[in-house]
Amino acid sequence: MYHVAMAAMDDESMGTTASTATRQQGASRNGAILVTGAGGEMGHGLLQALAEDKAAREARGESSPAIVAIDLRDLPADHRKLCDESFTGDVCDARLLERMLSSFEVGEIYHLAALLSTRSEFVPETAHSVNVGGTLNLLRLAAEESRTHGSAVRFFFPSSIAAYGLRDLESKRAAGAVAEDSFLHPHTMYGCNKVSGENLGHYYENHYRKLASDRIERPIDFRSIRFPGIISADTVPSGGTSDYGPEMLHAAARGEAYACFVRPDARIPFMTMPEAVEAIRRIMSAPKDRLSRNVYNVQSFNPSAEEFLAEVRKHFPQADTGFVPDEARQAIVDSWPEACDDAAAARDWGWRPEYDLQSAFSEYLVPRIRERYEGS
Ligand code: SER
Image (cartoon, rainbow, N blue to C red):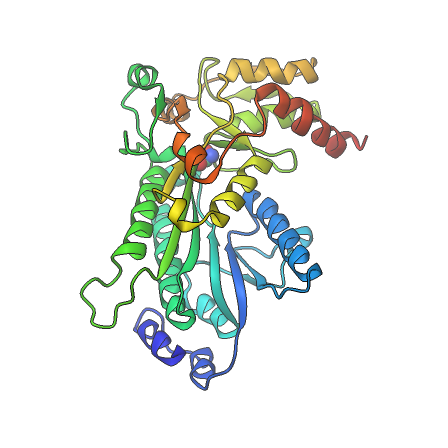
């Protein structure tokens, strides 16, 4: 059965490798959960959650798939110890994926690897190759793996508020909380890539190889969340446009001056990293028949940059923060909604925020950040 599955991948783009030959001899592979971009901000929190779930299952005497990571760079030691195997390389590299597949039978995928919104605007075509090309590789891998399992491969795709494109500030203010199916004309390459990934996920789930005689029904089970800006106490993002929030906070905690690159009145939704990871766990464990759509909004709070700074100053009154708006990055923020309607996520898979702005700071961000920078 596996021989048939891989034959479909052995075209000129995938190449025929030694590992293919191994699989064709029927070598058995270990079941695995695959996390791409595992070395990034979200990867750390997600690997932790997956490792906890695995340990809990094993403690109950149940078997558990291996946790396998892929990242462009060698994983930091604290990420590495959370997985059973890690591969260093590019999700666009078919041979790397082949090498991973020679040892592992993938049943679930968290495809986090991507270039973020600000970085993507400097190299839009490269961003497209990585963000869409990588997603396509993983979707195809998932669809072909499902032939082996005889069941759908569950696929998580982190989308973003960058999928939205409000025409200008006036439209943004008039729109208020946007629902999932409106304003999907993003102004950034990253946003275009996210919309594309969402559409491809829908295609692979419902229509993949529509005309092929050997097509299988629903090879993947595609689930996606459009995340707002995410704030972690443990890491600072890089290359994103919502980065001004976490950058402001971490700079204040480190006692460093910070020039915020958006206007004081800039407003987009945010959430904390633990809430983002919990949201992924929830949507991935929801019964499929409860999901009325593939892609869901979520958000926890949506302060203006000025309100965010006021909260920072409550805890770090010495914060040396000024506003030096960068017009181009501001324009990106102005094209993103000021709030997202997350009623579908609440109804279908029980999404609810853990924090509001004040409690996010007082219960999660500030205690953890103090511990990190002050060791107290
Ligand atoms: N936070 C991301 C960024 O700013 C959007 O998903 O690029």
